[in-house]
Each structure stands twice: as structure tokens, then as C-alpha cells.
Image 1 (cartoon, one colour):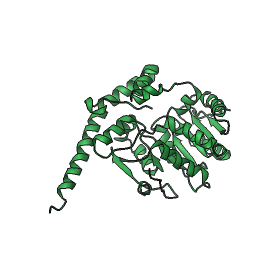
Image 2 (cartoon, helix red, strand yellow):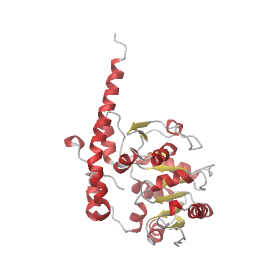
Image 3 (cartoon, one colour):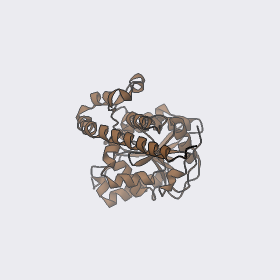
Image 4 (tube, one colour):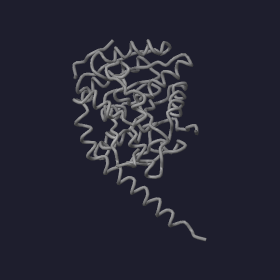
Length: 306
């Protein structure tokens, strides 16, 4: 059921010319410092943030490990950077702070993966939030199901997503859903009400679909209060689960053209953002590639010669 209150993804595959064409994870118990990244087997430093070098399978396994563990002192949360995030991170201090506190950071955009490859410090693959959530549900089916809470999307969408999730993953129990009113993040009373709503439900998995950077900053502001084992800042995932938006066919995703499919199916919402990102991201990527290669070259020159 969706309540109301008195207080009211976009990855872009930028063609950077023709160039764009399994260890377990160990993490600290409390996700509350940048040292959290260093507890992982490996992370790639790119665009000013650390992105964990994990596959989809490893990301799902880590989330399920947290879900199977007792509730910790704070909620662990996952962020999924894409091109739009990279552009926002340049000037948005709140988003940077949210990234520093995240327990898991996965690359939700082929341009980030491709940039890391061209820079010589490759991420293994794209780990899209819109794929991660269904895969967690599927993994949960093998062990009695996951308790999930859906937070975000427009009025009625989270409720429809709830019905479809429980139909497609019968062992999954959606213990609550809520579509917050416009501007809710500025209302302390509403924010506290949402935290209490989630805590009463005691979910294993909190799916937050509020759009960037709102979803990341909201989690950063409240993860210490949330009594959920894992939260994922999942962008448009609730819309996909509800059938309001359609994912690109698998072959389109494999060609790394999902951004084009999404633009064609939702131009009014995405055209402006994609155009802005298209003007900014190529220079950021080129700078990152040059910086990383220069650093590697200088490091090699410092090595003693026989």
C-alpha cells in the first residue's frame, strides 16, 4: 500500500572514437569510512572515486552474504555509478560523501568499464543496478526468499512493482513499499517517517529508486538509522520491476547500446541529461586515461634498472 504525506539511470555510452568498441570479498563490519574500500580484494581508482573490481556474480554473492548475516549496527549500502554520476561527482560534495561511505561501489555503465580498460586498470564488467536487484531476488529463491522494501518511483508504481516481484519470485516477500512525495528530502518529519516505516518492516533488502543524486545522499544521511541489512541505490529499477519502463533487449545490451534504447523510449526525461553528459564525459574520460597512463609510465621509470 502506498502512503502519502503532508510534506511533499542513466548510463550514456559515449563513443570515444573507435577505441570504445574470482576472488571473494572481505569487508569491515561497519561501513562508515573510506577504509571500507581497502577491505575489498581490489578496487579501481577512477574519476576520483573507488569502484570495486567485481563481477555481477561476486556482487550478488556479497549482498547475499550480508543478507544472511545478522543485522549490523548500520545498514550497508550499494551505489552504482554511471556516466551521469561521474558528471555530477565533479561538483556535488554530498554525492562524493555518499560514495565514500558506501559498502560496495559497482560500475553501472559500459563507458566507465571501457575507460578503465583504456587506462590500463580494467574493471571486469558492467554491474547494472537494474540487473543486480533481480539477481538478488533469484539468489534468494534458492534459500527461502528475501524480505524486500521498495522505496521510490511515482505514486502507484512501487505498489505495482510489489505485485510483479512476488509473482515472479514467489519466495520473495515485499514487506513494504512507498512512493515519497515531491520534495520529501527537505522535510525532516517525512524523512523520519520513512525511516520508521522501513524499520518496522525489517527488510533484508531496501531498494531505493529516487534518482541520482537524491537516492545516494538520502542513504548517506540515514544509513546509520536504517534497520535494513542491505540497501541499493537502484535508479529506475522499481520502474522496470513494475513494467512502467522496459529494459533493452539482451542483444542491445550486449552491443552496449542500452542508452540509445532508453533514450528512444523515454526522450522527454532523458534527452537533456544525455546531451549534457555527452558534452562533458568524453573530456573527463580522456583526462582520466591520460592521468592513469602517465602515472604508470612514471612509476615504471622509477624502477631500478639492472
